[in-house]
Length: 284
Image (cartoon, rainbow, N blue to C red; front, side):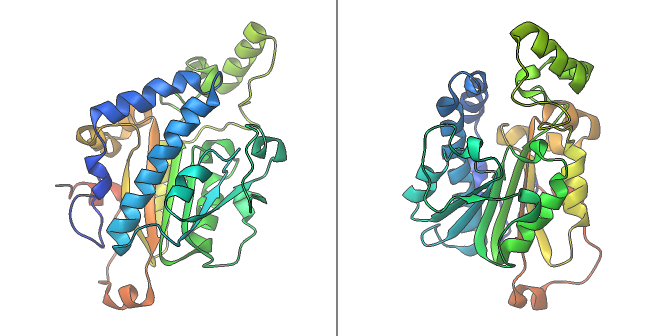
């Protein structure tokens, strides 16, 4: 577990990370293609709770009045959950067919690429992306863009599916372990149609190590608050520290970050930026 560096102590969200929650979320995966509302609805509730907890840890405030930018917001399942928190929710999605796939309408939705967000610097309080990084060819360009548009003192939450985990191939799994192209061709032969998530076009191999390396390489004004496996109970968060196991068992990696405000920068201690595994070792 990565312990928040600006606010010492166990992250508030860790209290929600129970085995019961893990089983509920993992059990919903089978509905991703057949009944997306079941899967994405549950993930939306969990995401709103995650964001609320980390934002309160960071600022001491609720989400009321915040602007939340959702990169790759898709058809809008998350909109209702953030509306309950009195947040202004803005989804960004490059594919107009994806925006309307569920028949939902989200006022203020923006068509645009996560790799070139159509927003000015320091525009939003919170920027999130859930299960999107594995669908873009340059996910760490997208992660940098998320940092760029977030205000100093704001929150960035990036969550993505790890390729070598059990869900890395999405609907083509578990055959992705034999190669993404093989898995896609097998899906076509079996179902008579291309998979929605086509390897090399709309699905890419992203490792847990890639997220950790990005976190380590962020500028000094960026604070990595936490890195943990999203769908695991708290007692299994240590998996993120073990190189081989994290690729196979983490399944979905969450990176939580903030940009220091000017006041925080003045009080920050000098020194080399610690790697994610180094900070992780300080878990309580």
